[in-house]
Image 1 (cartoon, rainbow, N blue to C red):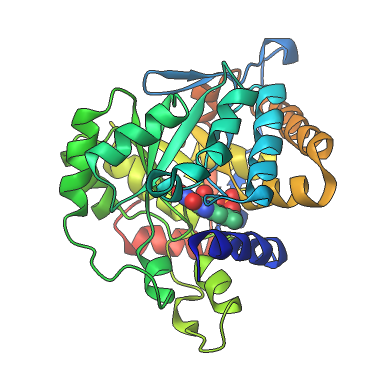
Image 2: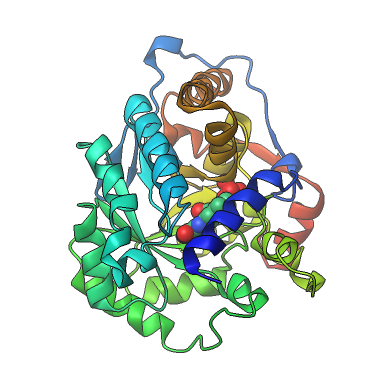
Length: 342
Ligand code: FNR
């Protein structure tokens, strides 16, 4: 099967995958504050990913690599919404366009639509330094995502089977490219051990890409009859993954993603230690089923709701939201206790 066809199938299956609610955010409760001492007009959503300044903690996470008219239209729509809402956006894996020039248009449209926006390039862990530089140049990217997707590859019969040398390639890319590098998972979460190793080779920003409800094992399984079920619930739930990484590697900038569906989920991700919050599946679903205007309305509502939540907590800035008191219960509490966090 061609890479482009596989990508279209991913989109279709992602749209039809029911919410699983595995992210762990339900285990987090904010401690209500009756004296927030804040004026709503003074609340702002600016945040930073290292040297990158963002006007909102929300961004559109990587989707829709591959070529074809459908992915072109999706990328165009996502870019229009990102521009309108002034949020950052990552493109999907550019591997196909690095191999085949004809597919570049699918990605270049994102920069054409959104000339001054913050855009992240995206490559896999098999990419070389040259691939990384070309992916960044293709869309004049402000940052580069390198995705780690071992389980997704294992579930695909045609997927990679050699996972050696990844850390070394990441180190070389971090040293060679001129933009910040974000190492991300794709829905299986990042452990404290992985984060520490990435930190050791010079990575400054990680996206935990935790277990939520866009599960590539489930998506891959829907495409075939010889189903591998044991990876369906594999992974580190997003809430636990954020705490693992943020508390073990305080110098890393953490992005919370995987199963973020509401402004409340986003607020919880930030309060657990994230500086920004990526969303993929629900934004794609909104765009494809309801169009760009609905996507813009969804993102504006997220901004509005996050502002109200910050007001209730007395947090004027994202920085302050990262320090509000909260209670962790249930499976997330259990996970974190087992993993040595108090
Ligand atoms: C993805 N994701 C993804 N990630 C990546 O780094 N490169 C890619 O090419 C893709 N492709 C892709 C296609 C589709 C259709 C979906 C839904 C997702 C993973 C994505 O960026 C994100 O990490 C996960 O989807 C988890 O976030 P959500 O969907 O729970 O917000």
